[in-house]
Length: 312
Image 1 (cartoon, rainbow, N blue to C red):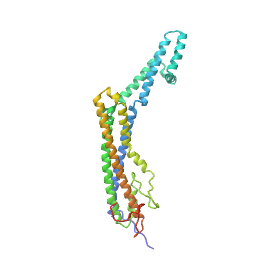
Image 2: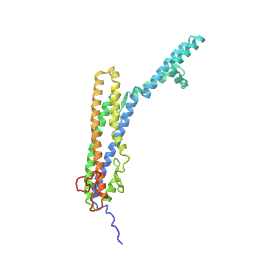
Image 3: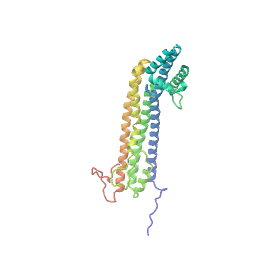
């Protein structure tokens, strides 16, 4: 009876290549996490700064409720029961939403309570929405500069991400080509594939195609900067006239530069997609060569030979 010799892990030079490829894959994953965090923070700031945001709507509702209460109190001060009754009915018809708003909030029963609540909301808007404090740096920026700051942040992160994916693709191709020269191809395939997150390598016992049902999720995560930046730019365009009333030069600069950043973000995202596709193709080719019996050729759906010694 023969016993298979266990794989010599500690004296295997190919694993040096495997470890290098794993490190670049890990770095790409960490950069993607930073991109997701930046996307969430920038989108959250944009969402709260919209004219239709919950905070702005609350301020508007409290302002209308204050107007309703002032008119109601003026009627009550007349001390004419018939005039009060008719006036209150007319006010309810004129301010139906404000009446329901106050009816469901008994703590806002008088003008002073509504005024205090309105002042608190305006203070929250001024301190936490109109001006953003950057973590770690302590710098305060105006919310109108979000398009420029966010665009610059996304461009830097995507440049870093593209560089990492490029190194990952090259390291992976080098590692797989070295592994193909070894007898135990499946061992190296498994050792490397178990460390993948952004790419799901094909299952070796699958009959055809890739078993990657979550690749679309990764692409959506990679596209977050494009989606967030276009939302910010669109909001800047919508509020262009409002910004003009504060500063015409700054409004023009912000809209133009934010739009240019969006084009840069879109181009870099496309480059990252291409590199991710290149990585996926390398895995597909390597899986086909691992599956192919010794001495036989493996071909893809187009009939191209996948067992030749070309670069993956």
